[in-house]
Length: 618
Image (tube, rainbow, N blue to C red):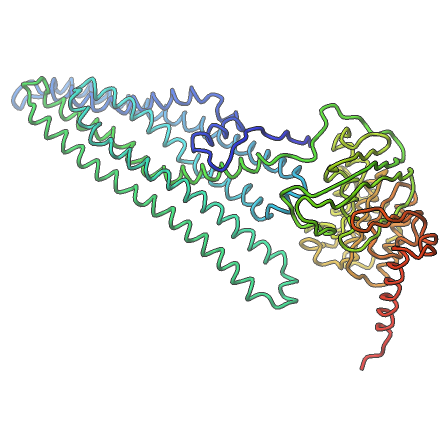
């Protein structure tokens, strides 16, 4: 999948409805293409609807030739002509609706695909900062509001606007005075709609935001069910969900009240307008050239003119909801994609890759999410002047206390972010010059808590390599020597892991992640070890699988268990974002420095833990 280019709309939260719609058309050009013909078809349909009032006038003025005498033949011809006009109008409207429906569905498909693709390439900082429930709401409920709008509202706007324009022109042709009276009385309705429109924009925007917050809160409760039960926090979190739900309901009701205010206003103005037209028309009488048929026809035209206004009062509420949803979708597309993709990428050389880090500094940007390895505040350097060379094929462990910057260093090497200062090269190529797809095919990260899909173990492993077969999966299971573990599962490779791997232990989830990484067969492996404790047998399996993986590639382990560091070729020790020690495990232990103290503390904790586990139950 090609990384999307960051949109350059430069829009803010104050975008008007018109600006938002224009931006939406720019993002989804398929909706704009052919829009002129669709409008023409809608205009033909509208013109067909005004033929009937005109024919009624002809029937009254020319079909009734005397007192009680009717020209039946003329009336019949006019009736047939009216029927034909209605059929033409219906066909034209139908064609316009089909065209708009097809293009709108294609546009929404393109918009949803674009949104998913964009979210996929957002930086991890943006994912941490933007609640996942909010991002899900952009793709689901916000797009759904647009779907609902195009199912009826879009065509209603097109039909109403063309009908109102054509009817207004015909009314002026009939009698300019009556037309001006009708326009003048109905004009305040437009002012009312305009006044309420501004409040509707704010109200619906707040309602959409509240909906995203509610979805985020619900998602946290559902996905965090084990922790909720473990700490008995169900009541507390239920109150949080209840509060966000009530807030969403209040905002939705507030927006609905504005919409409810608009509906009766159209009926009120319709009564006033028709009454005024009939009164002035009767007062004018035939002496001013206004025949009985013309007055009756004009009344019908007045209703035709008022129909769109009344319909506007119904669709404006849905329109504002759709515009608010579109604005929130566009706000996600406005989020810049970082790190950026090079315009002319340089391919990585074949074979195992060395890594060079030169004078690297890093501080988190203004928008800071939660990071597992650092509690640094805004603008505070997390890494300072890091310089080192990792030869191809070397196994390196990065250690340090919490907040030392070790996880951040791994993120920079994987180019989940770019250094504030300095450069990182892989295989002699600066990371900023490497295409994202090329880097991901050569460098794999196994995170602290690997994400597993609610599918079988086999599918979760095969996910790492497009087109991987069952034989490929079984081959990597044998290669990493975990056949015994797979056989111990209830259904072997067909065992479902549950949502986020909930049916597996933390160690088993890491085993699946290692199998996944082995199947990808990268030249550089970055392993951020899980901090949760695992049973002794699983730890042996993990260590054995890791040794097999590391033996054929450059490996960087963010080591939380110092047993990993003791098996590595080299240990990097970070403290306060600075590389303070660099050497083999045995050398660093003899130096009696930072690593020695960390190792002693780890050994003491391990001894205490093992001793407690050996105590008999009392």
